[in-house]
Image 1 (cartoon, rainbow, N blue to C red):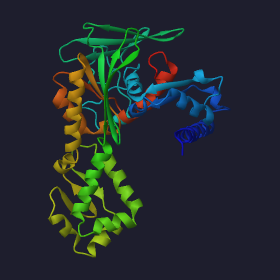
Image 2: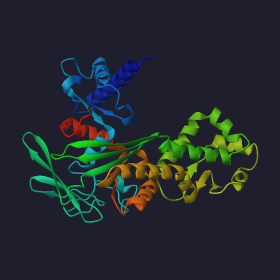
Image 3: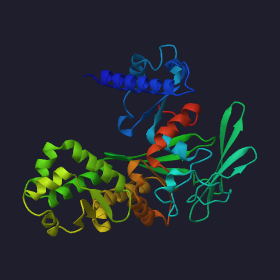
Image 4: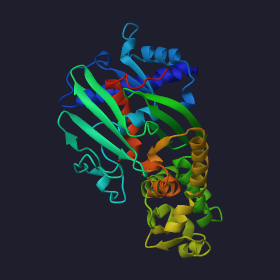
Length: 372
């Protein structure tokens, strides 16, 4: 299929599904595509794709018409993520005091002097103030003032060089490391960065799957994977949920895998020849050290690429971690240990959602940043 056809049908499906979902909501009412501003987030791997092609796809998909193309906004994913992190009031940032369950709770209000490593969002008359502090006590305060014509963004800083952010978007397959500068008035300007393939959550997942193949040797795992792909996928979903922890974890072992393994030998025997895993009452227990080992290659490569971008962009004040793999306690701690002495490392609550939320923010305030 031609690229235009693929883009068109993907956008058409997303549009139809969104409108159907909204219509089913009690407050949805009668709505059509023309009632909305549509924001298309663009990954950096596609940033050089002609905007004309994506606009044509949006028209063919029914998002906008030939006379309503002004209701179509393009935004780079890293810029959308950063826009949300600077949005008032912020969700706050993950800290050592945030447990896995507390991430789904609204942050407590905090005063204007709150460190960026704590949930922020203390309000002042007429504005919401977000205070970000660097280790050397330089401060950047972002003021969002509500005015009749919209939201105006102003910046104040003791050090004018501390207006730059490095956004590290850790996706499933690709990690984008992109530097941005906050310009006067609040607009975001991309300064460049790197795109690293095969350096995301899927790399960690494949390490885990390789370990299962090592445990269930003699062709047991290979046969199971071929005959029960849906059960394998369920195991992977469970691992994806647990891999964000920095502790021993337990993965349920399906009955069909246990039965297939026991045809060869007693199931405990499979675990005798591997380190970091054990069998107990129908679950596979994986040690914290073994879980960490699944991240080793990814973490070392992330650090290498981060150093490369930081060396090319001076005066970076903040490293902002977003994307699904940023949920990982190990990733956050490793990057903080490596760079926290020089930069402020931030990770918003629910970091896998910030591109989506930031896109909505840019739809409301497209003057903050647009994709050229």
